[in-house]
Amino acid sequence: MKGCFTEDHLYLDYFHQKEDCILPLHTSVSLFLLSYCDCKTFRVFLVSPEEIPSDSQFTDKALPEALEFCLIKKCQLPSVVQNCCLPAVLEKNGTFCRAGLAVVLRHIIRKTYDADPSKKEVLELLGFKKTCLKACAEVSEWTRLCEISIPLAVENFLSLSLDQHQSVPVELLQLEKKLGEPVRVHNDDKIRRQKVQQQNSLVKKGSSNSSEERKSRETQESPVDLELSFSKLTVQKNPVSTKREPSHIRKMKTSELPPLEHIFAEGLYCTLADIVLFPCIHQFWVFCKNHQDKMLELPLISSWYQRVQEIPGVKKAAAQCKMQFVQFHGSSAFQAEHPQRPCTASDEPEEENEDAQFIGGPRPTMTKLMANGIEAVFSPHPHPTWALDWESLPAAVNPGEGKMSSDRALRKQQQLNNLVALVTNLARPGDVIVDFCSGGGHVGIVLAHLLPSCQIILVENKELSLIRAKERSDELGLSNIWFIQANMDYFKGTFNIGVALHACGVATDMVIERCTKVRAAFVICPCCYGFIQNTAKFTFPRSHQFKEVLSYKEHMVLCRFADQTAVQLPAERRRIGKHCMGLVDLDRAWSVERSCSYSVQVTSMEPETCSPKNNLIVGVPV
Image 1 (cartoon, helix red, strand yellow):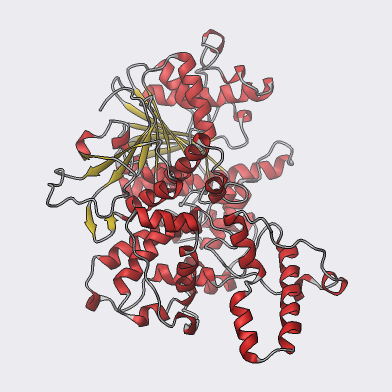
Image 2 (image 1 turned 90 degrees about the horizontal axis):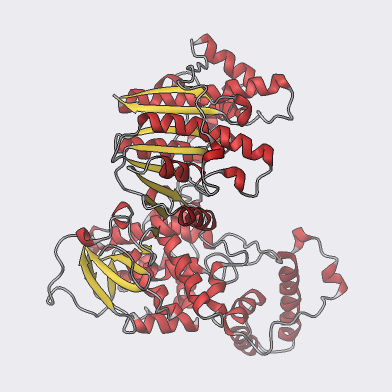
């Protein structure tokens, strides 16, 4: 399965089938979306981790009838795809791969619309600004919940027998809580005033009718937010009324308006999030259909599940995937029991205790570190005068040939000089070098051109940036470069050197983690220190030495002031900002040295004026 082919290939894990469900759930979700979109653009491969299932083990009970499938073993995957977690899409050129559930599903939607622009309802799954599930799971709690947490929680739930289950998975309780929160949309104020008008109208009509007639009408007349939601799905000839509200409603304060309630997962309109969650929640309900107590704990999810069933595309996709909807008896009687809010990092009592001891500002924090013998130390640059002859390089390699101003292009060249000098000194023939957070490929393309005996992999979440990098690579005719659009967690390949230029916030820590996991050297220029915060994977400070001295809040002070290095700021503030940068990166360096057996140095780019964020963290396994 090497080389180019005539159509894009979609690779899905196939572990086993359970009634109308294919596991893992990421595969069931992908097939459900393909059926919803009626997408025939891809050749679909089901990938077995070991041997291909026999006919007795493999049935087409849960497979969409309209799609054709090919069963392969994991070892038969193309080389670039073997570096990624599935699902993954490999373009017909064989060098551009998209991996991870959210990235692949968004790509399916785009390809469906490109092939048939009349399918606007498919494109609208991406939301108002086309950003649904676009944010990385590493930084977005909502993307993480939809893409990772709930599918895994339901899979774990299905793997146990009913008598082993004591409670509803906490991830579903988080979704229940989310569905109970007020909805905010771009035309929030207008819709809330329409809701007041509709409520007033119902009250007036109801006062002159019997209670039975009133109850009958309330079941027939949809709330304005529900009416708006389904008008977008069904392309009504008579859309929701847009008449101007009476003056007394227009004069109401925003704080007096009723909140909008969730109709779908992200608010008033059906989005990709609903398509991702629906197969997962469906399997949960199938498993629990004889246990009413589980349903009573999740009244909002129960209502949402029934509402999504009414969407025409969902009905069609469910029929193709042979899903039989679970029907609730007496579901209108469900009473919302507010679940206890799951504990998160911000709920921990330690944070509250720290408030009383916390002293703000960078100087007290730096003084506290100095009193404990901790100061920012910058190692000398090993190649301070090394520079590429940019004029002799092809135009597609030189950042100065793009749309940058001459000053910015010069600074970018100087930044690249620093990283390329360090990487080329570490590289050996046959090495695999990964350019994380690659953007438009400035670092990776230079390395691919200079090191033809090495394999270069660009990993980037933003599609347009990676497409531009691919175009530059094609212009150069490079054959030693792959492009992977994925969140960093979905890249699982082995490699020798990791590099990143201006990895934002915790992305620096993610690159370090990826590199240390495979014992690879790394050269990283961090950026956006102010975006550093505790996440599901990382807590700060990182090192034992810093944890003994600083609280989380004090460490965050260093991070915020580490962003105070812009050229327009006063010199003293920039000096403090640079010192804070050095302390934050020293904490990272010490953490890696102690826990991973690395030799790590923090140095500065030459010249330092090439970027306000000019630190370099260089690590080599020992």
